[in-house]
Length: 209
Image (cartoon, rainbow, N blue to C red):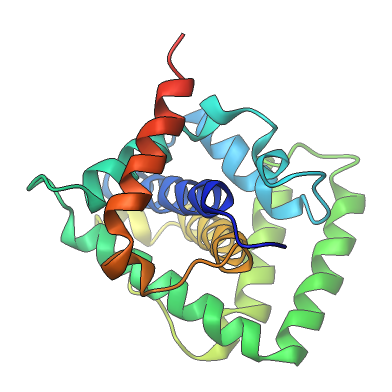
């Protein structure tokens, strides 16, 4: 994939949405259904016809993520430190995954098997969510860099919530792959922050009716 600012923004917005959903789940045990479905569906889209096809070929499905980019990377003072910690953690995990050929091969194999299951179940069905959680554990948690999830203990101890957390982290890593493939790197957050924010604002304007 050629380096592209617009594709970087799509990947980063997808990553931000996955992390935002994770926070909402861990803090309040709540998920916005449409965003949740879009985010999980991105995992199984292994050969998209375009970067935006990863998210249903609809930029409005990334509206929340685009807004988060503006808030988190902009010049305002509303940055969420916990959110930044998740973002850094996911990007670090993706780098480790990219360097581990064995885990990458296994991930591709398991996601290929998942495609067959999706012919019979919705992506948000507990059967699929459980499978996504297992894939995360098998292929990414095994890399050794666990992400500490913060929230309500009585929520996080629930098995169903734990599975959703892992599924959302897998979706976040998938978005991070798209970000990296388009040329995104940690240095962009330092030296191209304003450019990223401007591009996100431009895309955000396209989501306004």
